[in-house]
Amino acid sequence: MAIADSVLSEIQARLPLVEVVGSYVQLRKRGKDYVGLCPFHSERTPSFSVAPEKGFFKCFGCGQGGGLFKFIELIENVSFPDAIRLLAKRAGVEVEEETPAMARRRSEREAIYEANAAAVAYFQEQLRKGADDGAGRRYCAKRGLSDATLEAFKIGYAPDRWDGLTGYLRDLDIDLSIAARAGLVKPGQRGYYDFYRGRLMIPTYAATGETIAFGGRALGDQEPKYLNTAGTPVYTKGRHLFALNLARRAIAKAGFAILVEGYLDCIALHEAGFTHAVASLGTSFTAEQAGELHRYAQRAYLCFDGDGAGAGATVKSVDVLRETGVQAQIVLLPAGEDPDSFVRGQGAPAFAALLEAAVPWESYKIERAYQRIRAGSASRAEVLRAVTREIAEIDELERDYWLVQLCGRLGVDPQEVRASRFLAQAWQRSERSVSAFTRYAPPLPAKNPREREFLAALLAQPALLETAAGAVRLEAIEDPVYRRLYGALLEQRGKLEAGGEPFTLFAGDDETSGALADVLSSTAATVGQALAFEALEEQIHRFAQDLAARADRTRLSELEREIERRYVQGEEVPAGLREQSQAIRRRLQGKR
Image (cartoon, rainbow, N blue to C red; front, side, top):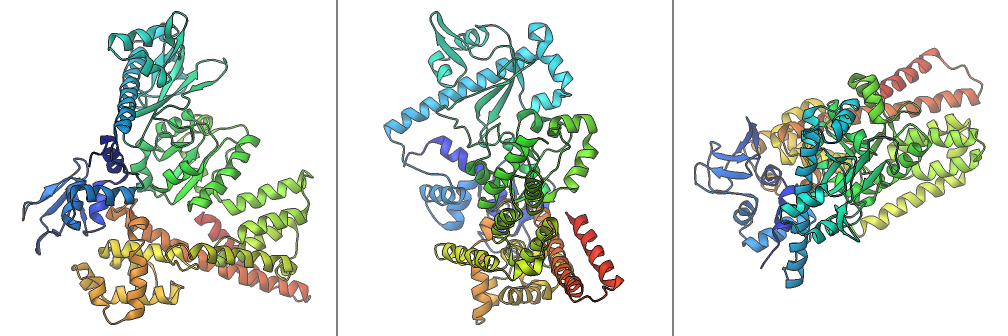
């Protein structure tokens, strides 16, 4: 079976070797590499090593070694083509046998990649040598971009002339018709001419490392501010995230991504040390981009411009992220600021404080809805209905908390809303939609997907059971089946850490084995983004914090109901109740 090299590269880019091996072998970090017990022969002392930077594994006991595809061949006992198919399915990459027509398209794509790479080198050289009297370098200095950042992003400059890049590509014997297909040059009456002139040039990369597009930023007030690559055989607008190739490791380490709108917003954040920032390339955030982000992050902090357009983009992006399963937090910039201007003017510590003060999407939407009432564009009833429908779709334990927050902001009695027919219908619609979905998907307990993720992380790295035992109490696990599985894992943690097979340890216990099978079915999807020991350990600590916050929200709802009841019945509200409520609310605000 002939498979294009680009397909193999795409699989390798999406599935780092240590993550794949880590789903089969319990690995521990040792320096730059990872070690564990070899899965290909019996041993008590680890002699199996994975080198992520070099992309290969080696057992110094039995001698087996190789790269990603070789590992799957050996561990799954399959042929090379079947190993490719298995990994392609896991990575979400389509594999087809290469026909002559596909070979021609691949050849064209490779030629475009070559032309784009040559353009990157040309633009960088023009910036370095100060073309157009150093116009590009002065602009970079004004924007506070260091040489290290310019090199990391491969930023360059297109001189203000018609034949600079054209001549350079011609000297390299690069077909100018291919360069035109790439959007680098344009055909005219006298031949081809440069498309980009007098602009800062910012390349965009695919996850596999190829240059796929460019953004040309005007240095002054001329319009358009940006000239961007249109659709080409290697680039489709709305499918890619700018700087994901640079940010994905930092995203895995931080546990979340920062999502901004513009190139320079993203670059400025990287310059300030926030290397887990990516940008939507100036487009409306799409489902394809959300899906790409979801491969690396379960949470995203949205940081769009602090104006009306930015607020509108935030609301739309929240909805797209929620559909993909990414939790959204909103970073609130002062009016008139964007991430670039803020971090350059106020500094990295001030931006870090904004991240700490980020609000959940529910809170953001409630405040936006309230502003619509103040502006006279919506009635209280309309806002109540709209927001209630949205919060009906979240975790049932959090619904009432956000309902109380919404009612408090709108000046509506929560008791009346709880008793309303509309609320019951909204809740039921949400439950029916969950049921309709789970008929066609693997059965997930609707109540606690986070508990499922927590258990999946422990099964991926049993060495973390000791950490989990100290951080997460057994009774904090709400789902009774998952609570039983967690208790069984804690009881057997010594054997699991020594390499015991979970199904063997729980043989005869049908309920625990069933829960185990359910959780194991999602292990790769749940922890495939960051199988490094430290990343999973951080995930467990975040889960423990989430459990504490959930308990606080439940208690706060109980207290607020009691306070409401006393108000309605004309009873005195003890100061202790108010103090408890305020203390929990402050604690919750501090956790966001």
